[in-house]
Length: 263
Ligand code: IPD
Ligand code: CA
Ligand code: CA
Image (tube, rainbow, N blue to C red; front, side, top):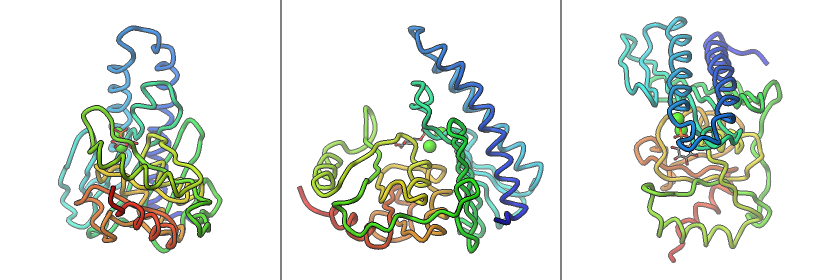
């Protein structure tokens, strides 16, 4: 598997930030018992990871624009390229000592996502993809799962919670999906959910109210793994509409139809 120089930069940045998060995660587990919990500590870990990533990326490509969850948008002099960064996806898991979280970095060129890296330091799993060059888990090529019947599928999703999401609408969708599938999973890290679809671990995924940094790396990964990923209306406006449906061609279509069913 030959990685381009740019993908190598992204991998180095993700792994360096991942090592920092892994160290902080150990400390978070010690802080669980305190009344206030480790939330300030986690916010520091999150910001530190972003600083590491942006430092590494800027060192290699100082002119690129950046969209990062914590620091927001920074325009570079290069009008073509933009890094899209989530330094810690799965913050709630991290805060609660659940080892399901990831660093996500994508590269956009003229509005198209051309490379993505998602790294879960707790499992030491590195998911990478480059447009036209395939998708990999560590050094193994990834393909989306081949299942053709929803009744055999495990589907990932994001569940709305206090202060977030349309609860009533979601309950209708969940009821419709759960009656058709072998299992539903809420992993708690959207970038990792998309990587799992690319790896064939989840057969499909849907979620609303996501941000570009949750979605970007996973989009190129699923496409390079032979899968389908779209907004909830079947188009490519995932960033604008802030929602996503993914799977192989057949499961993407059937899941989309189930999600459209009325109450
Ligand atoms: C969150 C996670 C979660 C998803 C949320 C995201 P964060 O990202 O991806 O799985 O359900 O909508 O905001 O806040 O942990 O980076
Ligand atoms: Ca996120
Ligand atoms: Ca985050």
